[in-house]
Length: 381
Image (cartoon, rainbow, N blue to C red; front, side):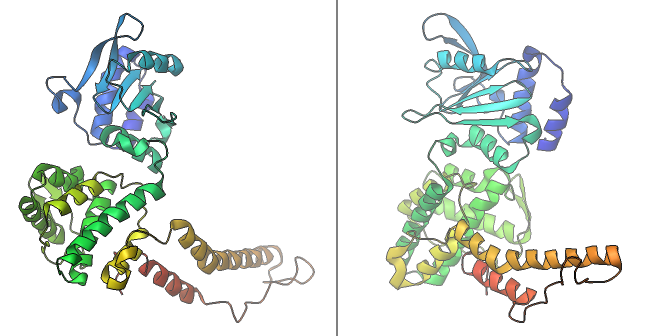
């Protein structure tokens, strides 16, 4: 089920809470590629509907949905008081092993409230009609797959720095074993690309992270499976039961996988466990440039060209001149419509002449290309 299909279905639904809750949750599982409770845990020991509990302060109750170490989830009917649902979950949370997320839903909206020990609670409210917004999709994926990504204080910069540190350590370890710097950078480019690709859905079913989890730190098994995945990505086809797209370009031009150690595997697993929707790709141009230069190895992961810096350059070099050109073109069109002439002195003033010093459009495009080319590991000269 797609997000659009989910919205269309539940926009029309007029079911009462008890009639709708479980089907609504199962549909969310399908949208966000997560097993349903019965499929994910047939015993109901760690993931189930109608989790029976003893309330804090006395009495018994049921949590509508519970997944151990992920969330407690309470449904209410449309337009019901979700604050009351939240207070209900607060009474349940000790019996639910204190999950990091408390989720409330009245079919028109989903409210996610964090419940991490030692932090101030943060709230994410997702209206049904805005479920398809990028940030809301990221929030819901975190609810189902990685609650840690919603921990208050985990900014994009913090997550990106963690990613940089892990890959800096992997790069240093591989280079320390005498491996060719270009081969190291190319291999790590592939790992980074796989993590971004599965986060955006280009690689299905979190396939890279699944491989990392399944091999349980065994470098030989990981390298064998990773080589098979690279091979499939190069041409497209099936990787086990999963259809894999064809990734063109030269990134996956062969199936070469560098020899890894158990220490490398631990760092890769740590990197795969991060919220890659929050990782800023701009870091990796700097990261891999320094990975190729032995004199800069100590700086790996310490600095990167942030998104704000890039956007500042883009705005000055590309967007501001384009906005000026658009303003001039708009004024010309208005004059043509009003008078039949391109410019009229005294009506709105003479249109400014194009400056001889103003860079040509393609000069600006080439400049921004060079900027991006130095900050992205996926661009080649």
